[in-house]
Every structure is written in C-alpha cells, then in structure tokens.
Image (cartoon, rainbow, N blue to C red; front, side, top):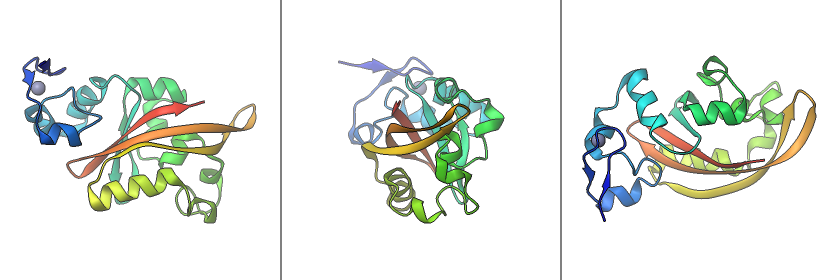
Length: 164
Ligand SMILES: [Zn+2]
C-alpha cells in the first residue's frame, strides 16, 4: 500500500526513516527537508491530522502550532508562539515565578522529560501520558495529557493525543 504525500501528492515511500517519523509520516521526505520559515511550517503542521506544536530547543519554547492545536487550547497564534509548552497547556506550574520547566514541580514532568530527551537524543517518544493541574478562567482542574514527540531537523514536533 502506498500513501501519497499530503503536501505534494507524490507517493510516500515506506522506509526506515518513515518509521521514525511517526507524526509527520503523511508528508514525504523531500517536503520535510524543504520546510523552512513560518509559511512552510504552517503547511506541514496543517497537513498533520492532529493537534501539533512545533518546538525549538534553546530556549525551549513553541515556534508555532497548527490550527487543530489552537482550537484545542482555545488560543490565538500570538498566545502560543514564543511561549513555553506549559503556558500553552495552562499548566499551573507555568504561572509560578520560575515558570514552566523551571519550577521545582516540573522536575518530574513526563512531558518535559520526553521533549528534552527528543532534543538531546533525537529519539521519538510515543504516548507519553501524565496528569497536569490546568488553570482555566473558571478554576483549576486535573487534566489527562498525552503526547508523542518527534525530532524534525533542529526542531521537534509534539502531537497532543489527549487533553481533557
Ligand atoms: Zn511531498
């Protein structure tokens, strides 16, 4: 069975690299390598049929998010771009003085650990789940959050699989 690239329509040849690319697998290798700049990222992210954040490693923050992610979190692009992941999720620990990833409570955050490892080892992580206290306008509640991660060039994709 051959799938076609969501961006250019050419067949996506299954290979070992495609197995590593569990999130962007519907996009062919040449389109992935051609992606650069904000407009290219937007096309790539919106080709993925799930809420996705594109993160940079240093400082670790969101470069941009696709439309499905903005809808899921109820945010505008300027509320996620150049923000930390926890700020996008509205994690209570992102409202602290130290901030997301730096607060003492963040040390054991599985989401943080998976994303950091994807940047340092280039390994993908599948179905990393945890519970976070999420602060919304109507109060703080516990949310189940599940993500997968994948290195994409110098950046990383974070697919949101559960946020409820
Ligand atoms: Zn393509």
